[in-house]
Length: 170
Image: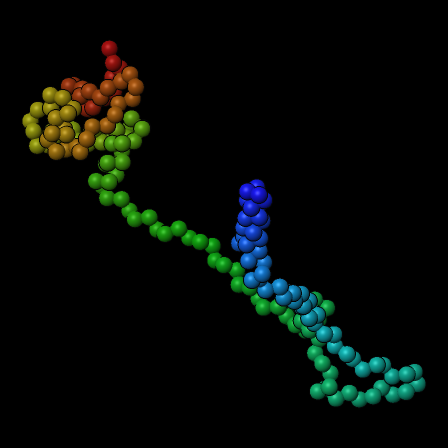
């Protein structure tokens, strides 16, 4: 008897589940099918006269215009203007200070030597002797920084020519 009671409870609970309520609450009206788009109408022209008869005059207001198609040469598609080529904005000219900074960080040792020698010339214009080392050019506010020398070389001041040169590391 207990087993029969448990089975009856399960059946009742299964019958009252949410699924059955959802189905009962749903609107089961059929969804109308979408109608096909209407096709453009063709112009109906009067029939040609029979042989041996004069053509009938047709009033211009009764002739329907043809739809815009490839077959209708009277309809001209609008002209599309070509877009002008894009021009890059003008680059602002660099100041001498920016040029010097770019040459200092350049990978080209010739650019580095050019800036170092300009700084050495500025040093010599304000001092009577050469700096002890190249780092003094930075400390004397003639350079914002020292450039990196190529691998296996270093920048050095030549005492005879009073120029900065590249020498090999010993």
